[in-house]
Image (tube, rainbow over all chains, first blue to last red; front, side):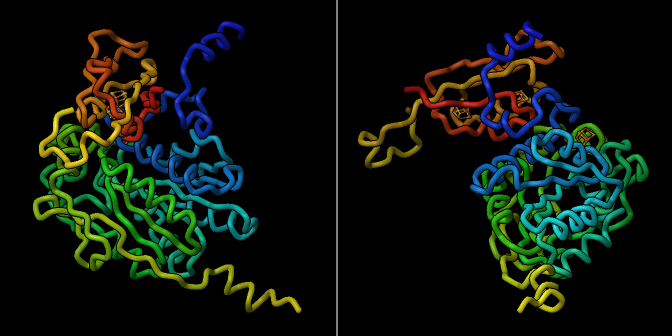
Length: 280
Length: 85
Ligand code: SF4
Ligand code: SF4
Ligand code: SF4
């Protein structure tokens, strides 16, 4: 033990060490995986929000991104597949002082958990949902997902995906989300600021973050991790307030990033309290 | 410092000087910090860390402007910068 402590003393501390479970680092994410960057931007957003850190709770579903709940040094919950949002809803309803963050992947939030997403947005549950979109099911070996671009290769679509993917910001907007943004992990600074704003905003906030899965998506689509990042730099355009219907992900045409929706509506809890918990 | 177009007030502005710290054994050698450092401060080192990856090494320490970009892009919490006093 004494030896270990000595090592800890010698090792300089990273500025986010207080928010991560350092004993579990290095994490399991592969070399070049973008989830770590999104996770780190989320922690920066939490710190900069000025909110009390012990009033945060992070909820994740299943998948590579779902592991985040196990690395954050606040109360966290690693739930069953697709069910991060219902668990988070329960947490928030039971303890309205908590700032509940849902940190999960595209497969978990939009395929298995797709219905939960649209209904939480419709109700305007006071949650901040961060979706790491790596266009595939990374953890299970790179199967086609609801977000895989048309004609992209995956283990289950070896000659190209015949389907069309979801436009996630459009889905969030149409379902009633009050804050909708999209960034890539390369835009980590904008992302951290956006997360900070979303955390301070009441109502349902949704941030989509494009992030490379070099192992199970990149490899099958001839994209090295750095190629994906260069594409994030060269083939994206920031257009705040863009029409959500223009936000399809097509890197040939260019991908639009920015904050698209920022409106105020009464939250589910406010409406519920008004109707069912009226106090004289 | 090199400029593409020298700002009019270049001689009045103090450029911050940073010092970059690397936690070598956390690094997985993705190279993002090296590629995207705006001041080309870093390069791959030839040594291996505990897990067998090549961590970055500081090539041009004087170039660091403490922008923290390496810190924010690193997926591994393995690098950060502080202002030198
Ligand atoms: S499989 Fe893909 S998403 Fe999962 S950790 Fe590896 S690179 Fe990241
Ligand atoms: S702080 Fe900025 S300039 Fe210094 S090493 Fe990191 S990225 Fe480069
Ligand atoms: S970004 Fe982090 S993990 Fe990648 S090479 Fe730099 S220090 Fe290592």
